[in-house]
Image (cartoon, rainbow, N blue to C red):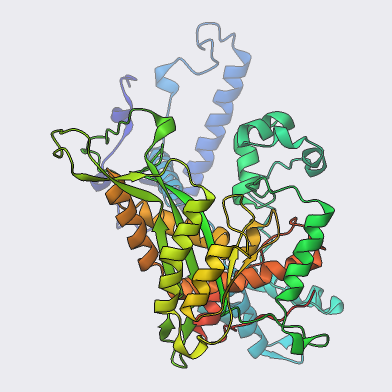
Amino acid sequence: MPLSSWEDFLISEEDIPTNTHEPEGSKFTGGEVYSDEEVNSDKELSCHSQNDLNSSDGGSDFLDTGSMFDDDEIVFDTIELLSSESETEVGEHEILQVKKRKVITNDERQAIYAALLEKSVNGKLKKKSTRIVAEKFSVPLRTVQRIWKRTKENVGDGMTSVLHRKTKNCGRKRIQIDMERFRNLPLQQRTTVRASASGMNISPSLFYNNYKKYGKIRRHTNAIKPQLTDENKKARLQFCLSMLKEDSLPHDPTFNDMFNLIHIDEKWFNMSRKNETYYLLPDEEDPYRTCKSKNFVGKVMFLAAIARPRFDAEGKVTFSGKIGIFPFVTKEPAKRSSVNRAAGTLETKAMTSVTRDKVRSILINDVMPAIIKKWPREDANLPIIIQQDNARTHIDPNDREFCEAVRKTGFDIRINCQPPNSPDLNVLDLGFFRAIQSLKYKDASKNIEELTAGVERAFESFSSKMFNRIFLTLQSCMECIMKVRGSNNYKIPHMRKGALERRGELSCQLKCDA
């Protein structure tokens, strides 16, 4: 029989007898039926042939690999070949059908444990209870048994936790960084993520994960605060104490409502920022902005005057508190003609320097008439306090011209100076100026007229409710100042004023616990 290919030894399924019945004392082998005597004789012959092979030299009868070389003595069993091929196919099918082990969540584990408890009597399960629960939740039986066993092990400790133990025990382990070493790192080496990682000799991604993902490191923006002397701290304490209601002392100290205060201050507003951030479509061109010098961007100084807004029982605004915002500008005729205007046309120009006389003029000619026009009539007979800082350009509280102008109005308007080096005691510096500046930058300004108009729109569009919250922040800052004995080394507390306002629980006056 020539050894040409494996196909010569394969037979089709039709050649295999399907209706063959084995008689007693016979064996089915290789598609034919043999009796027991014939099978035994075959075994004896095979044994004799094996002995003959072992006794022969076998020099030319074997290959180097030790396999038989003689074609006539190679015998293949057709049934064995077919069975080996079928086993190979089944093995490949099993590899393709491998299923991942189901991960049972903690909620499912709790549900399985609750189902087991329902089927238990005095802490013991009934017969086949675990199998029923396993079929109900489509989980392996051993998983249900393991959950029940864990609860029994924890009974002695008073715990019945069936939560999985995968948390922090599987997956890639976190690389821990030495927090004490980071604490001892100089602050100047902790200004950026890359600098901090370099100082710790770790990768920037590892440091960033501990900061952003795990929350072990916090980011802090530090601002330089005014340096205070002992006299400044004493003045700050006295000022904060003066804002407490006299009838609430000493058992229940409470701040005044501050309805009679008008805060004034000056601020520069620029036409544009040096760096702007825009969100563009992929096919849009980048904006191109130019100016003669980035150090001399067009700007105007404004003086703002605001009081605390007032609301009725339904929460409607009865007095906005916005006295006004007044620019330091002048109107001058153009000296020569240009493509934009003819000679003699009035032009608006910003004041390059603000003096005390100009501040006095603004107060008498602009601020005072606005107060008389907008102030609530029911409080017209009460004193009105204008609070200002200690800038050199501000007038003295006893300024003769200002007092003479007040006397003619019939109102009781006074000027009071806040403590030196205390911008945190003025609502304008606390948040109002920053808010309207961000609103102003939403409008593009190309000249002084557009800049002043944009600032005035931002001033009028600012919400009175948001403005009222700044006064409550001022009271909380005063409380912190008294706690730190006049210092400015404190954090402004978060009161969740928005949530309190939505629930109608926002108080007009805070209690002082200092």
